[in-house]
Length: 389
Image (cartoon, rainbow, N blue to C red):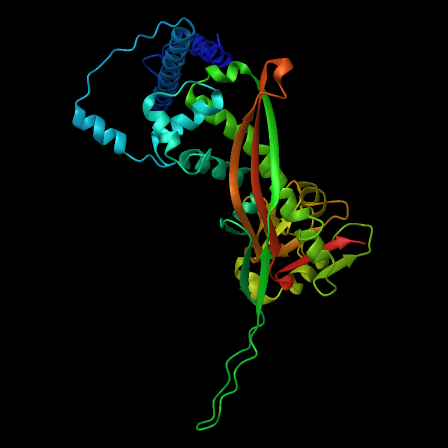
């Protein structure tokens, strides 16, 4: 019995026990009590139906796996009309097709492919490309587990790219009639992004070959995306060459160094806000570690003794506050900026490869996930920094 099945059976038993233990309401019970009891029963019944449905799915999967193990599946020969066979043979299966998706998962599991899956896999010039549906799962998981990917300007362009951003802008001038116009001295900023490899290898016993396709996909996404996402998030913030901390902390005009040892005060945060050009205010957000938010900022009050951090709205002076585990807190760093001026490129989404060689002695399989990503801050004045000396 699988762990999930055991948990489902335990919860179903608990629900039955709870229902049987619910004493009937007296005829004199208040309407609110009756309504609350009815709502509670509806929730219990809905959860029970959900668990029973999942239980049936697991039982079906176990029966199918058992049939495969005992070689009990009987293939019925069906005569397909010649015209249908010809059309089916000519069909092209892209990486977004269910046939290719099934073939890709079976290849990784070392399962035998049927005729249609063989054609779907062979007709793709992309080799072992991750199916579109699975790639989308990987991408959503990356954005969920790497908070900064949802905040920066994220591109998905294969290979190295050069990104052009707006630089110094001059205001328009009043034109005197019949006089020549001098072109404005506006500038642009170019950001060149290459590719850094982010890799994760996970090992599992050959039991992976018996998992259903959906279960196998979900397992791959959960196991590979997590650590790759965290590595990318850390890179965006802390890379020694192009990380946010490196590029902002080396600036002489966009940082404030606090020398007091008593912690930050109201004036310190005001000075940091004043340092950010007003042009960035509409999209600006604070970025801090959880340590700094609760140990340094949460207790700060203004001149009227009102807290400057709103824990409900998660705002500081009206600016949203982003909390990220990879923001350093050794100097109580606080960042404020327009994070869309950090440009990132996921030039290769997560790909998956399989190997049995390194796990031969353990009868296990290695799955390697690889992504290629790079990022850089386009405009140094878009982010300001407060830290202890």
